[in-house]
Length: 339
Image 1 (tube, one colour):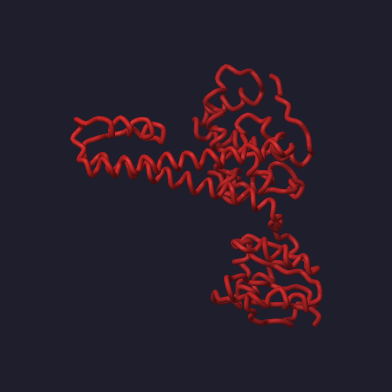
Image 2 (cartoon, rainbow, N blue to C red):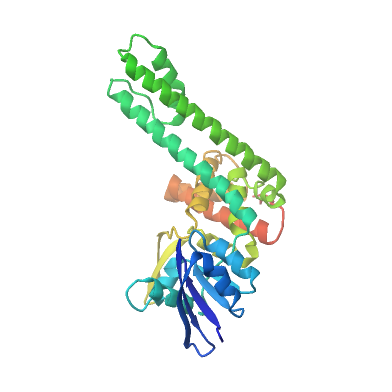
């Protein structure tokens, strides 16, 4: 079979294949069970295999690469415009096949197993942080039903709840006191597990030379550095720092017409986790820039004066994205620009 390009619609158990030859004529359209997918591709000549960058895409890309194929991953929003009819598996596979052949298509880098292991650690930590936040909010809500109010924040609840439990005169019933003691134990358990993940991430950062370079930038710690190195891989896939910032959704949305360019808020496209880490780091750094004389600090403070704290923090995060790209792509050391 003369197959030039295949669109593979991924699923949990059933996969749809759609292939074309060098004349863009359909030569393959079939449904394959999960257990037969590798065997099916082993019988096909090496070709381009397009897939949407979903949960299992990186695994299947690595498997197909072992068979000599050229797997190409694409963001789902870039595939949707090529769907000709109603959404179903066959039409999705055909759209993927069409999109994979476009000369200007943006492809997602294939992650290695080691990269995904680091990102699994990050996702597990994020899950625990979300669980802790929900638990703290739940504790505060339940306490308010007894007229007991704790300030917002994990640290405030962590410090204030033991005092409430020890106060025998606050009118808290015995049964409720037992429940709050159990919730406090769960909170401490979340803290310990998050702390353990933080230690593992710090160890990974110390063992990674690229992560060490990234942490030279103020506002970038082990969490951000390891997440970027694991997600990005080879930074040279981006032409410049601005393209990297755009990939993270940190550039302004543009609406231009009639020769007039109008810019709005950031696009918020791309990796939400990385963008969030960079903005949080920039917000923390913004609180310590007053009085500094280096070029970046003076620029950030000037933006803050004009546009406010939040927009200045986002602008600083975008600048950090450009700096981090340069450190990774060029393997250079970070140097603070003087006034």
